[in-house]
Length: 195
Image (cartoon, rainbow, N blue to C red):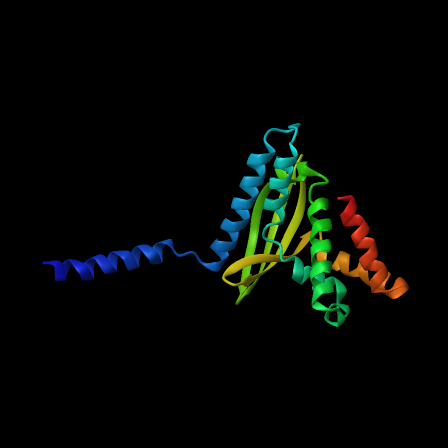
C-alpha cells in the first residue's frame, strides 16, 4: 500500500511545484508590485510625517533591488576599469549613497498608481514598461533588469524617457573630461558627507 501511495504523492508534489512556479515575467511583476505595495504601506496617508527610521526603511525598499555597481560602471565607462578595487568599491558606495538620498526627495511620487504595459524577457535581461499615474498625470516609467545569482535587479530606471544611468553618465563624463576623475570622486565624497 505504501509503495502505491509514494508515486502518487510525488506526482502531487511535482504538480504543485509546477503550478506555483512563475514565469520570469511573473517573477518580475511580483517583485516590482510587492516593492510598490511595501512603500505605499509605509508612506501611509498623504501628508504623513516620517521618522528617521521610517525614511530609512522606505529608502531601503526603494533602492533594495538596484544594481548600483552596474550603474556606476556604466556612468564611468572605461575609467572604471582603470581604478583600483578599493577605489571602485568606494565609488560604488558613494554613488549608491547619493542615489538613495535623491530617491527620498519627493516621496509623493511613490503614491502613484502603476499600470504594467509590458514585460519583455530575453534570457537574463528584461525590460519593463509601465505608466505611473498621480493627480491625473500619467508618466512613463520603464526599467531594465538583469538576473544575478538567481535574483532580478534593476540596472536602469527610465522616467519620462530620461535614463537615470545615461544622466549620470553624461554628468560624470563631463566632470572627468574637464577636471579628471579625482575631482569627481572628491565631489561625490562631499555630497555623500552632507547626506
